[in-house]
Image (tube, rainbow, N blue to C red; front, side, top):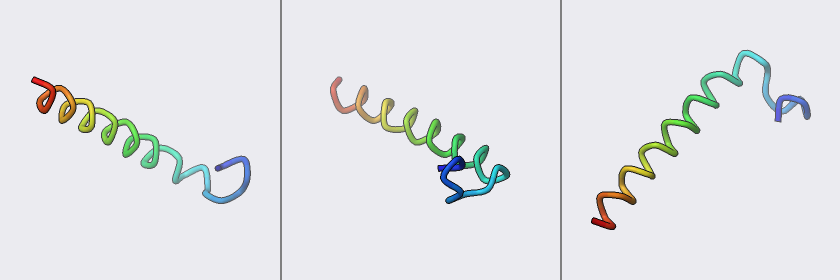
Length: 35
């Protein structure tokens, strides 16, 4: 998205962190529900 000019370079880091945290939370929920 940064290459497309939709977001600035400064906004990339928080966006990536949010994506990673969201993925980890989803993984934890998946493991807890599966067990």
